Amino acid sequence: MAALPLEQVFDFLPIASVDWNIQRNDELSGAGSGDMWTAELSDPLWVGEVTLGVGRNDELKQAAARIRSLRGTQVAFMMCDPISQYPQADPKGSILGNAVVTLRTIGPDRITARMKGFPPGYVLTVGDKLQINYLDLAAFVEVGATGAADAAGNLDVPIYPNLPSSFTADSLVVVKRPACPVIIEPESHKAGTATRDVTDGAGFKVLQKRRS
Image (cartoon, rainbow, N blue to C red; front, side, top):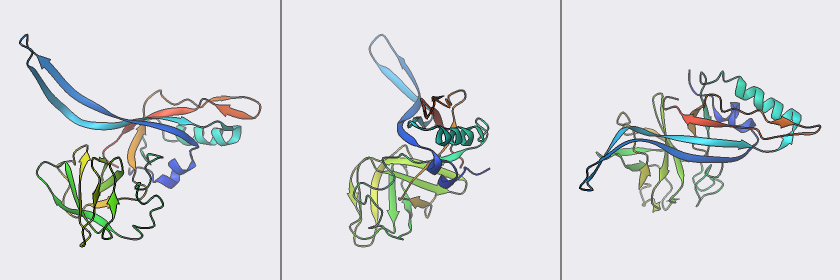
């Protein structure tokens, strides 16, 4: 089952803050000489701690119902970084307009997004987020250095985490409202505490689900 689109879950949640972070799966070993060896056992995953704002009881009751309807980890949904829904240099997405951005080529190191389709001079700033789609996979990546598109609309920037090896040229790049497919971390949902008028303390944690 595909992850539910933004308008079915994310857009209805009264999100106050999201603490996004990367969960790495590294192995570290060392010797008495001080030499150290590291190995990445699996690809890094995005994780997030979501805090819902204080709101009227009905609003938070509806939010809790939407979260419970995901049936624990069974149903994934798309989720934005609330402070990274548009590039910093294009905060309303109006400069990008209806441009369709795709990957141009894939470098062997897979740490650079080589893209095409931008308006000439379009700027991506370090910290911007991108969503890159290929078949049923969605990569949620962070721009590692500021760059501008050339006259042909080509723009190359380092990204983190690396692109999955299955991605190919012409994969679609979502620049406006990029989202990450996630599931609710088991036992993390708190519906909040209701008083006479408002509910407070609601929130949950999410884990990236690679296949959207």
